[in-house]
Structure formats: C-alpha cells, structure tokens
Length: 118
Length: 110
Image 1 (tube, each protein chain N blue to C red):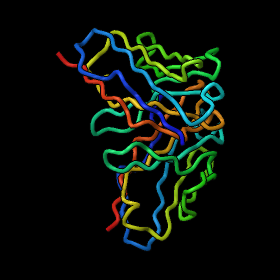
Image 2 (cartoon, helix red, strand yellow):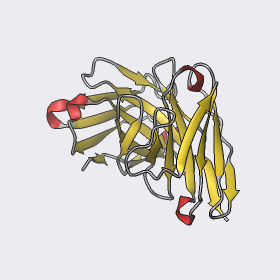
Image 3 (spheres, chains in turn green, brown):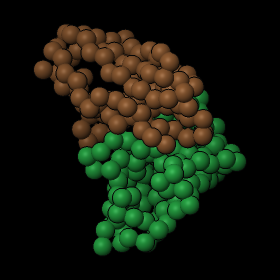
Image 4 (spheres, rainbow over the protein chains, first blue to last red):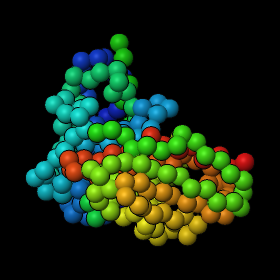
C-alpha cells in the first residue's frame, strides 16, 4: 500500500523559513517523479513544485520560484520542500504527491499545514 | 500559469448525469493528452479519478468518464449517487513543464 506521510508543518512568522518532509513507502520511490501541491484554506489546489526521479530536473510555480526548493533523498525514500522568505499567502495544506507515468498524480498524502502569520 | 477554468458549482439529482467542463489553452489542455480529474471530499485528500484524458485507475467506477476536444476537457458522472457530492478538479501538464489545476467545481447531489 502506498503511503505518503508529510511532516514539518507549523506556525511561522512572515519572512522565516520552514522545511517540509515526506516519508514514502509502498512503492519504488527512486523510480518516480514527486511533487508538492498546496491548498489554501477554503481554496482550490495549486501545484507548487516537482522533481524528477533522479533529481536532475525540478520545476516550480511562479508564485514560489526563487523562494522554495524541492529535493529528494532516494536512499531515505524521502521528499523535501525547503520554504524560505515565507509570506502569509503561503498559508496552506501542503500535499506530498506521487506521480504515475510522470504525468498524473495518483497518490496523495494527508498534508502538512503551514500557517504564516505574525 | 493561469488556472484552468471550471464552473464553480453544478448540481443534479440522484440517478441523473452531470458534466463538468475544464477550459484551458493550447499550452496546456489543448497541447497534451495529460489531463487528469480529481475528486475531493471535505477534509480529505484528493483522489485520482481520470488520467490521460480518458483513463480510469483501477477502483474508479465506470460511472465516471471523461473526454477532451481542443482546449477543453470534460468529466461526466452518470447515475449520480449521494457519495458523489464533492469538489472536482481538473489538471493538465503545460508547455513550461509545470502543472496547472482548475479552480474546482462543487457538485451538489440534490
């Protein structure tokens, strides 16, 4: 059974940093691209970032480019999201997402809540 | 990276059919056969319903079907059941190697 468990969320002041982690199990982690998708309270889904299976390439939404960094450790079956210079508009539930065929999101974690507020 | 356009809400009675549209551009929906649809119940994680425009993962009932024409895609749910009441999102790969979601459609089963 595929499991994706996010951690590292919390309350942080604007301008500060936070690092999310995602522990993956139940599939061959090193074979698939992984992504982060977020959902602000009461709002829709927003793609944040993605990384290829071998970390050769990563892509970002314009709203986080230059502030967030996605990375992975295939030896630890883990995905990360380093979030710097956080803004109130980054407040959201952040989902760790597995891809299927690199072109769809077939399994989602339960999410980690990040609240940016003074 | 503009969001794909979906109706904010749709409604229908149990047993009826409903179609949700998703409009993008030639740079996303129209340019790739990588449109997916997701179902999200309140306080739950999204669930993949459709990928590759028309493909259903195992476990998804065949009441859910989808198609694409030009820059628009659509999801049809037939034989509506009360448990189908949820939010539905479309998504697409884009020419910029990014992904974009629709704004979401709230389905109410009357």
